Length: 205
Image (cartoon, rainbow, N blue to C red; front, side, top):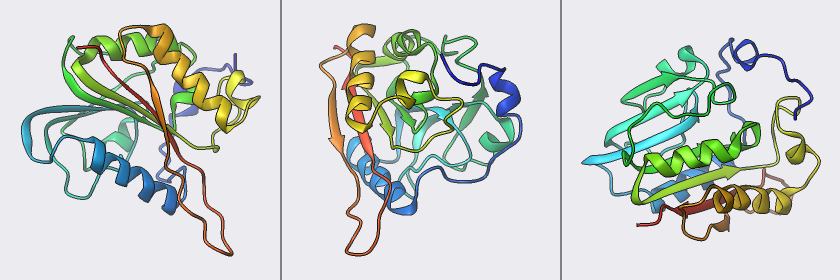
């Protein structure tokens, strides 16, 4: 459960043109995407940015034949230059993804996996919609809207979050063994930065 169980559509009805992690963490996530994504420009590649908004943190200039954004606020999605199409959907109300089976080469979710209140169903849907061998990558930090994150997330720490997301992959079934990367940027001598982790797995071929 979550502290605030009111309708998510109301909470996300106003666009938020802000970033939810700092610039160094964003850069780290973009570097990960540059290494994990298929080469840019391939028209037969399809990517889903799940829980998307006005920015996807993809490498600059990255293109694919189909880049779908699935999110809660249409105004934010309209502003996202990475997307070729978008759909507005509340996965907490209905966790079914509006796509055919074996559609996507990659599904990503940036700093939003902690808001899913039906994670197993969503991960089962990701498995259904991925092509065999396709990659699902969930990235997260330690920042969130605490009233909307699920209680198991807000009551635990970073390493627990890694195991929580890994368990979503495991219990959803149909994925290879999940793995984790700590892509947290180095804060430097006098600074600090948001930690950044990616838990990822491929659909069984």
